[in-house]
Length: 180
Image (cartoon, rainbow, N blue to C red; front, top):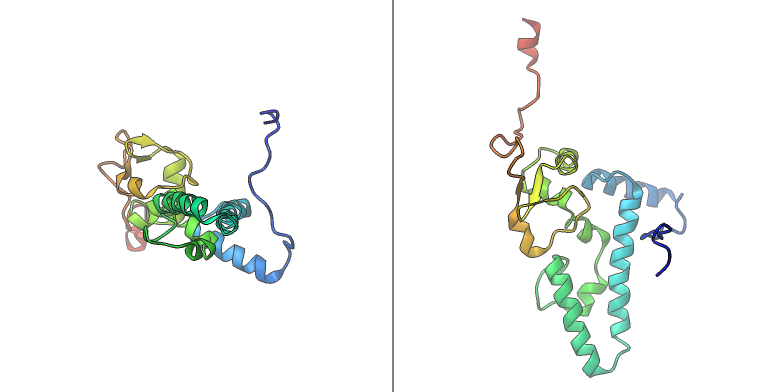
């Protein structure tokens, strides 16, 4: 297992990080999902690559064992929300992109549900402890929300936003009133 004080990184960086096309696409993904740094993209890419590798390794197994393991992997990815239906196939796993995993992050789902005005505000609300999943406070924006937890995302009971959620006009200064 190794020394717990010397943990390994959980992501694999790009082979050629300075390609202009890669830089542009990573920058766009960072803006779309409100990511703090590119390591979050690389982590998602590494996780999805691992799932695709598992799917490819299933193809080499004997048919009886393959059917059992394929069902397990498909069930797991469906519960995570990475696959659209329970009748998905290995081809669907091989077609996964990192965006499908980034869509399952708590930060993204909080923004999509309308609990935050922007993706960046969603990150801040999570880090500051205002968001709960199933009544449990989650402070990690990268938390992968499972399909059955998605409906239980709400403000933490002691959060001041529970009764007064952020709205589109909150915090903005009216220019006409400012001059008077």
